[in-house]
Image (cartoon, rainbow, N blue to C red; front, side):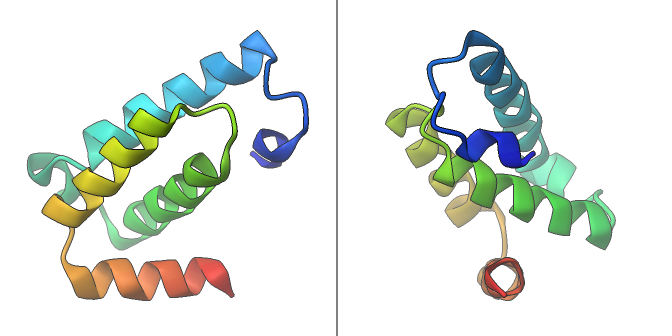
Length: 88
């Protein structure tokens, strides 16, 4: 997964991988799916979100959509706890 931080962000395979991960994360952030995820899967989604937001291969509008999905669908305390855990 660390391949997202490589300088070769114009690589088409990287864009396909990012697009696939974005699709999965976006789907999992929907309320009807989010609350069915086990805590470990939720933590993994936050790790993926951090990776996607840091990726130069993900367009800005998709980053904004991810942030909006998190803001609207995930309890604030869960966001704070998981983002702090990913920062450490």
